[in-house]
Every structure is written in structure tokens, then in C-alpha cells.
Image 1: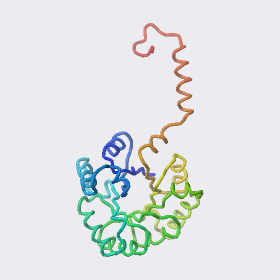
Image 2: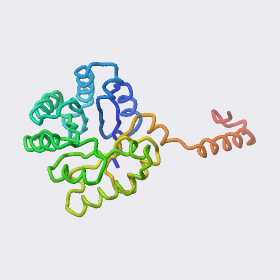
Image 3: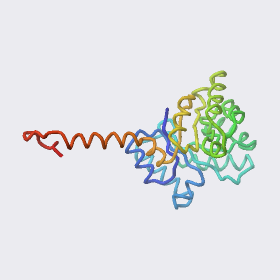
Image 4: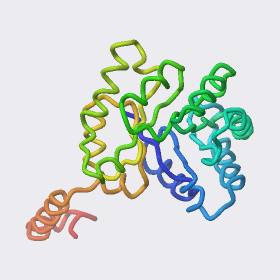
Length: 236
């Protein structure tokens, strides 16, 4: 399963990229706002960072950037998508899963601009992005579970549908809005291709209270083990 970072903050991107295996980035208007930069400055900085890392295309390292969420005209959606994609060959364009978005994604994919159909909240919404050949589909997890829905079956249904019709692996399934380490596991067990989450969620997933308890137990044992006066550097 691939790990994408859900952020537009360059320091977080650098930390995640340097400290563990990061396979891509997703952003949205909220992440751009949280970066404290203008939209153009934020995406320009991310594009420059990707280029500095030697990434030359979305195949090397996909970076999803969302169009203006107010756009509901397919022509305007397509034009902004092309403008954004021209900034970096790594950019994949996030399009909302609404009827004009479907129209825009169809045109963009036909013209070689890769898309990520986002704000997907049902298995039914995930079918058309695959038929269109979108690179990614982003079913949201955290928002649904916050409102009492269990998303394990929802993701499994999408995976099963894609396997039934040969879409699996062609349109990659990004479990988005991940809030907990358990949601990582649910998506992995269901067969999703990718999870995307904020940096803190990843840091939480690398930790467990029993691991901390175990370390404390072993540290105590280490401290109370007889010391060898010949040993160097390990007697603490």
C-alpha cells in the first residue's frame, strides 16, 4: 500500500519524505490555506521541491492539486486544470465528484491531463471515475466515520467492483480523510491502493502504548543488569 501525505506545508512534506517512504502528496484548499501562502505560491513551492528531488512526472511522484471549489462549469474546470497541470509534470488534478466534474474529467483524461476524482462518499460515485480512466479516485473515510458510518464495507465494495470489471490498479483507490491508524488497517485489508493522511496521523501509527511500556521494562532490566567493566559505550 502506498503512503501519500495530505498537506501543502513544505516543512511537513520534507519531513515525511526524508523520514519514511512517501509515495505522493495530496492537497486541497484547506491545506493550501493552512500553508499560509497564496494558492499560486504554495503550488509553485511544492513543484520546485519535487523538481529538486528529481521527480519528473506524476509517474515518479504524483501530487494532487485541487481546482477552485466554486467552479461548476466544465469549461472553466478544464481550463483551470490545464493551468495547474502546466506548473509541474507531477501534478494530478483533483476534480469534485459532481456531474460537471465528471464532464471535465472525461475531457481532461482524453487530453492527457491526469485526474483524481475527489469528495467521493459512496461506492456508486466511484464507478464512473474508473470508466473514465481517471488516475485516482478518492473515497473519504474520516468524515463518514465521524458521522457514525463504518467504512470497511464501503471501501471493500469499491475494490470488489474494480476487480469485477478490470479497473483495479488502473484507477487507483486513495482512502482519503484518514484520521486514525485503525483506518489505515481497514483500507489495507480491503485492498485500497493508497492511504493519504496528515503527518500526525502517520506519527501516531508508528507508536503504541505497549511498545512504550515494553521499552520502559527493558530499560529497567538493562539498568539492573550487572555491568562488565570491559564493555565500552553500552553501560548506561
